[in-house]
Amino acid sequence: MTTRIVRAFVLTLGIGTLAACASGPYEDTAVTQAETGHYGVLQDGDITLPPVDSQYLTEPNRRTEVSYNGTEAPGTIVVDPYAKFLYHVNGDGTAVRYPVAVGREGRGFKGRATIRRMEHWPGWTPTRNMLRREPEVYGPFAGGIPGGVASPLGARALYLYRGGRDTAFRIHGTNDMASIGNSSTAGCIRMFNQDVIELFDRTPMGTEVVVRTYDESVALEGEAMANRGVELPPTIVDPNVIYAAVEEQERKRAAQ
Image (cartoon, rainbow, N blue to C red):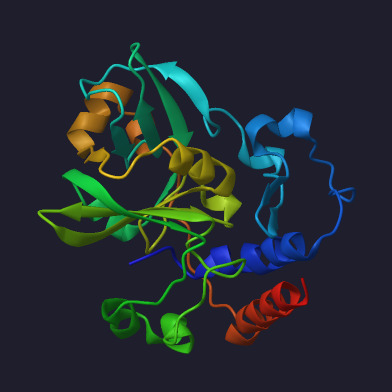
């Protein structure tokens, strides 16, 4: 299970690949560091992440520290798949709140789990269920996509386990900036790449994750917030474009 192939691929190739190949600042964009705050250009190893356009950062769609009204212990990650928020609980009555996008699989998971695996720039392979359910979308990618600019899992992934078994529930990055704050037809919990990198760096292995139910979301966020966002339709992307980006990434890395 992972992010949807749809608009994520469009933005991955339209923005992410260009960012990875860029050698200087983003002089051709109107989005500045002052406008984006946490969401400006970010160098991550040999990959340059583009800024998040300010149109996707309208409140509450940006990282912020808030008063926390839940009961979870400090250090816990709390996912609200209905309000489209992820909280990292601090020890002083506050939490860092991140906006997220939620796929169908993300809405189907509830309760508690533990992070037992963490990856930088993870690769992605569609599951058998995805291939069976939507072969026209996922079939061309059955061989998988290596980690990097074209991977729908973005810059980082945190893998949740329960009872020692992989739940197939992921918290990960995305280049599909427009999806944050909304729902999609497939996938787990997606974050702006800048946010998932920051969360990754402050999250130790073994961190507990709590995923709220709809009733809990309504009680803690209010009914309107528990229903925020829209369902985004899928689109099909040319696999030749995706794998061309992978080849270009490998060529650049080999030349360094």
